[in-house]
Image (cartoon, rainbow, N blue to C red; front, top):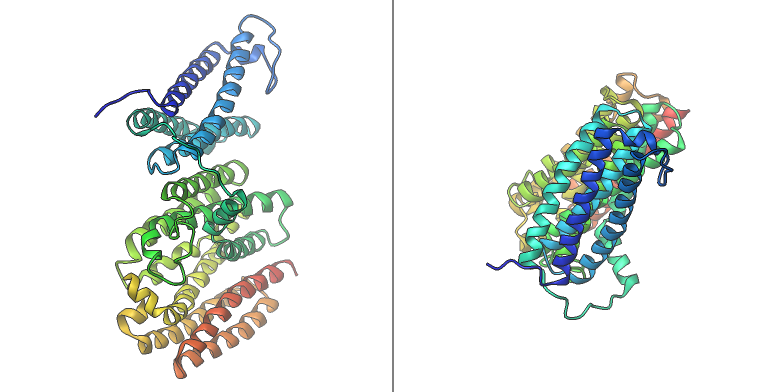
Length: 438
């Protein structure tokens, strides 16, 4: 195996490594000497004595490194889009670098909270591990770009948007916002709402992209998913992986910096739950994939509640349980409609493994249990009359749809159940919002 800096990309990475090293050394000197006290201001400061010039030099190096980092990221996304290691590594390094700068600024503004101090240290360690690995990998794998492809920018934006599964993101944001309002027991502030929903959207979009990266070969075998950007080849696997990892990392920095640690931690748990536990371990391993995996989609309302309160109460766990119990009948209805697709792809969904009759019975049973769970909020005096009436009315409609699936069978009623259950979840959480502020 040969190692060299013959490609322009590997030389760029080595230059980036050198600039980051100089910035780090300068920053360490500033910390040890207390030079920042003699050159206050950001992003430009005026030195008041000789030591202040170290602080000015440090700021200048960070600014120069930031510009060069952006250039390297652009170069990677243009020239290394087929490299399944180099492109994700470069992207992660870029996010960690700017995350380190971001956390450094935020912890000063917020008087150095403990979780941001820890995050700053962990980010620094991760950045150097990522950068060191990138230097080594670029010497081994990078090649000169023979020709830089011309992109249809509008199509690529559309493909990355599709990769984010926007409809699923929108539904998850509804449940997140409901948890935020319910936890606040009033309309939350505009800033808290914005940062919570932005962090939630990035986490959900990034998780969806990683899910499609993992399932890219499987998706080719299913009519419903064959035209997805990765399955269809419009985006490379490296682009999908890089995009998903970047959004997930950025979401954590947003949550930790602008919301609170618990909300950020729960969001991270949701990402690992969906990507690792469900997509990697459960989806093709067990018929209980949807039952267990439903916990991933049930975490967003807890994130909203934690964003509002900083802790989790009984109501937050009931919100989790509502989404958890809603997931199986919702996706089993879809699985009945797309049973041949799942069978062809080798995904052990319930109608594939146990047949349609047993699946229809389970849809009815889980729907009854779901309605019972929704009534726990008023039973424990955690919701009022508006919510109680809404839960009973919406539950009645959903139960009718599930009964039709059980008694009639067939794709038509299963598809109706699938669509009604989507609207049911949105409306039941809308009722939670209205009840909390009335």
